[in-house]
Length: 262
Image (tube, rainbow, N blue to C red; front, side, top):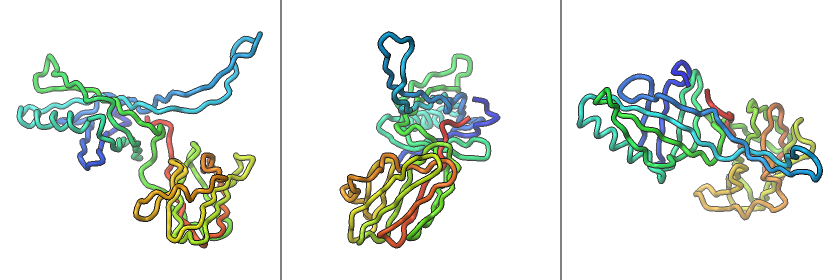
């Protein structure tokens, strides 16, 4: 990608260590592919017919390929930076890759596929290059900044600008009577329902991970009623209607998603 678009790339591990690469020395990003995304298809061949029938289509994990360079004349400083890179880009270090592109910042959870092999440039003695393949289990980038929408008992309207079906987090502060949220939009032919069993306290449900957790982080996934359509409980592009009952209030949180960043 051209430097006219991607300005800086930052990887921050969950332990707090981070590195930022840009288009100026000493830490350079020379190449990044954050747009390629492969589909996963299930197909069948009909007896006596040419071609195939695609029965399902989705997207799998993605890999963001980056080529970085370190250009530092001071040997001790250079070695310190390279040592930090080999420690940071470790497959066991999960973190967030942030791409500053134009006026927006997009991020994605990922980890390096391997500790990078660092090579010295044969023509410039103080220039070192290495490549990092970031493996992203969840393939979509999210724009930095989460949208928060309060929900009241009754019908609530949420307009999503994300072209991708968007999973949500729903925080229910008082779930003593349980909670039921019914979702409909112009893109679906049936109403999707999320039912939470009664719990003496508050909890947060994620339709991305199919989980529910307490305020202290305890697992409450068993409080999600088995009849729920949690696997299909996504915001669609445009107007979404959410009917909240049993609980008096809730808070809906979601990100704007992108298939790739250019």
